Every structure is written in C-alpha cells, then in structure tokens.
Length: 276
Image (cartoon, rainbow, N blue to C red; front, side, top):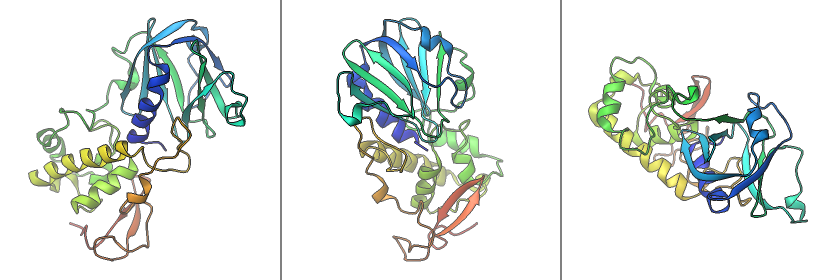
C-alpha cells in the first residue's frame, strides 16, 4: 500500500493544482470504500482549499467550512486531469470513485481498485477520532532518540512491530521498517527492550534518512502506486532487502531471509542482522 513517502509525494504533487482553488462540487460515484464516504462531501459547493497537510498517511484539505480527510488505502491514487481533455487518459475509469471538480478547469480524481481508501469530513481536527491516538510524525523534532528510548523500555514487542505501531510513531510502514532495520544491523525479531540508547539514536536517524530519501525520489515504485502526474515512483531500485527474499545481501552476499512478523512479510540478512 502507499506508505508515508507516497502520501507526501501525492500531497506535493496535487498542491500546485488545488491549493487556493475553489471546488465547485464533488462527484461521489461509489458511496462506500473502507467506510461510508461522508455524505457532507457531496453537499459541498464552491468551497476554497485554504491548506493542504498530511497526518500519518492521511491527506487533509482545509476548506472554509471544515476539513476533507482522505486515505489512499491499499491501492488508491490521485491524479489531476483537465476537465475538457478528450485524451483517453482523462476519461473516467471504472475505479475512479470520487471526483473533485475545480473552477480552474481541473479535476482531481481518486482511483481505488481495491476500494479500501477513505474520504471523510470533519468541521474541526480537534478531537478527530482517527487522529486521537497517533504518535509523533517521524520527520518531526518530537520523534527523537530520547523519546524513542523512553517508549522502548520494558517492551517485549519485536522491534519490527514496534516501529510499525502508529501509537509510537506514525507512517513507518512495512517497506521502510525493513530497510531501516537492515541499515542499522538489527534483527526484526529483536525484543524492543533489548535496544541500547545508541541503537535508539541510530534507528531514529535512519528512519528519518530513509523516509526523506524516498520522498525526494518520488516514493516507492509499488505496482499500485501512481504519482499525480501518472509516473510511478523511482525508489524501488534502491531498496536493500524488502521483497528480496532468497537474493544475496548487497553488503555481505548472504542469502536474504524472510519471515512473517505481525502478519507482515519481513526481510533481513541473517549475517548483517544477527538475532539477539
């Protein structure tokens, strides 16, 4: 599924076309995705987008009346097309479930073959239930070595699962957790309480580096992820271990192993990431 870098890439991709622009209306072609699409969205007319932001993997559009909150789900993507473009690429696809019609002649289309995304409405972000228990953003100052060290104490949880816990830190999904642990030389099944302070510092620094690198290069090239301009991301070629079970480790040549941890596929080098 699109992870934090893909969502950030999407936000930056649509911003030039929608920020400050007026939504004339929103067409909802399928009322239920992961949850029911908030009916208030179909009743919005002539509202301006005052701001765009991301919280975890949620896209937030601030309008004069409230907030539109979107989640790309497992296979969702957004693309911007011209309303009067007759090209095949501009024709609505059967999986285009939501369309934001803008006064500037642009249409923002949400495509989601697996229908596991979400589009919601709230008048205020204060107390919004989906955000209530989220941890700090990984690229923020609040996510630092001291915070991570304190959070990790007395936790028997495997570090791979701990990194993916949104109550600890948001947006470190499966791909980037695998990559970070490899770069830190930490086995994904290591009990979190066994981490040293130095390892906590290293993990925090590597998480920030890996995510920033992915954002710079447009997100990971998952088969289901498309940037707003129609191009796939170009970070997959630089992945070290994710999805490479059975292949040689890029550092030592040992065969990369895989295991299911917390119901997610995990990839690691048994030589570079020895078990505790």
